[in-house]
Image 1 (cartoon, rainbow, N blue to C red):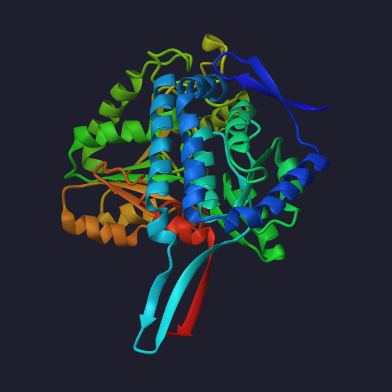
Image 2 (image 1 turned 120 degrees about the horizontal axis):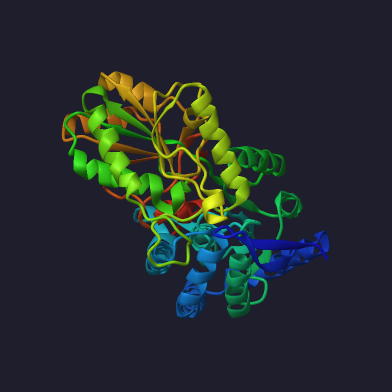
Length: 457
């Protein structure tokens, strides 16, 4: 039977295999989810929360095992993997703590003779398809609010991290009632077979290209879809910004997880009067990052997830070089030095808008920088993208913050380094970054049917 090989991007060694799901396997997993959905829906919300809380405790007890696996399989530095695991548990806790508040019936109208209530009901069987960049949190973000609401799940995790997927399946499929959580393994062909089943919703995180294909399928089926797609988040530094603070935050938001974050800061737009200072300070910060294998606790910047991802990044940077970009620091693959999928932290200047590093989503430690003179020009540059997920502003002028925030075509905005990624906040974007929102009360709305019952008292 064909198998997925799991390859450590730090050294290109094979660390394990997982059998690719056959069409029969996928149909069987869907049928299990379909059969289990009615019973899962009809037990009380409190009982579902109890199941999920107990299963989460089992997951927490296996933290050290999981973060080591995540570092080896996906390339996330071990300390970052630890922090990422803790963040995922915080999300689960918020979902569990707030589910009753947001899923309980709500009275919308009442008088002496009538009462009108809104109820949240499950949608059914949800196909959850997730990428590789945050193996645990992508699962948590895509699945937990669904499970709490009474939906059952068939998960297809990325083929780049099948062992992390198997780890998750072993915990959740065995500690929840049979059929509530199911998982299939493979590439896009497996995903196509999955969504061909009689599913009730698609929950997808990944590329815009794949998202558009899935959305077309959802439209033909006339089912709901939530799409969290690509991003090319702009960061704008105005002349009155706290430069040292901004540089620190930019460095984090570009280099965390080796630049493999959908809403990471990917294009920097700098006022011309502070351009040289910003480039100099960012170059120092980028150059000080300690690179190494992901399992090394001293590593701050690890490999990309795969050779495939490295080759794509190389092609994007080479395109910029050919078209006249200047290299302030980096610019080269370190594959031969480390025998893994490593690329130097890189800053590019003299950017033109026909370069791939400007027009495409760049998943890697590469930052193109362009200058502006007026606020209006900065907004035009920031919005000059097909994407609209996150954005970052750095300025001390409150009037400017309000004005620019209103003009940016993005779903989320961070001002002066404030972190917007909280479980109570909606996460999602404009334009080709998708639609629908995860987390908070907004996420619970997305994964449920809204029913109104109006009756006499």
